[in-house]
Length: 274
Image (cartoon, rainbow, N blue to C red):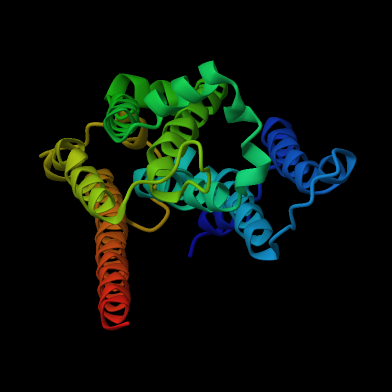
C-alpha cells in the first residue's frame, strides 16, 4: 500500500459543522428522555434498547462523515461515496426512528395541522417519490460534481439525503400512534416498490461504457482501480446494498404477518371451543 493510501485511510476529519450537528442531535434526544421527561412529570419509562438504537444511528452518521471514508469518497473513489450514502440513507435513519419512543414525539403530532402534514409527508406514495427523486437528482453528474467540490453543497446534499431517508423509513419503523407504521402486507408492497425504484440510476451508473463522473478521472488511484471499475463497483454497492436490505425486510415482514395470522387463527379456534 502506498504512503498516500495509508495516510488517507488513517485520516479522520473534524468538521465543526458535523460535530455540532451530531452534538445537538444526540444532546436533544438525551434531554428529551431525561431532564425534560422529569420536568414535565412524565411517567413513561425509558427503554435502554431504544436509547442504544438512536445513539447507534448518530454514531453511524459520525462514521460516514468524519471517518477516513469521507476523504475516500470526496477525493478518490466513487464506490466509497456510495458506501457513505448507504450508511446515511439505509443504516442510520431506521436506527434513529426506532429509537424515538411514542411519548417523546407525540406532543408534536397533537397539533392538527402538524398531524395532517405528517400523514401526507409520511404517506407511502409520498415517501417513495420524495426519497427517490432526491436520490436520483443528486446523482446527475453536474450536481454530483458540485457536491464533491464544494463543501457547503455537500452538506446540503447530505442533509437532503437524511431528511428524505427519514421520510422513507418512517412508514416502516414508526413508533408513533398518531402516524403509525404500515401493516405487514403494505410493508411488503412498499419494500418491493422501493427495491425497484433505483433501477434506472443503478443501470446508468453500472453499465455506462465510460466514467460519467469526471471528478474521479484525475484522482490518484489508491488501490489500482480504474475510474470505470470504481464507478461500476459503486453502482453495485448502491443496488446490492439496498436490494439485500429490502429483500431481508420483505422476508421479515412476511414471517411476522404469517405469525400474527397464525396467532389470531389459534385464538379464534380456542374461543370457538370455549
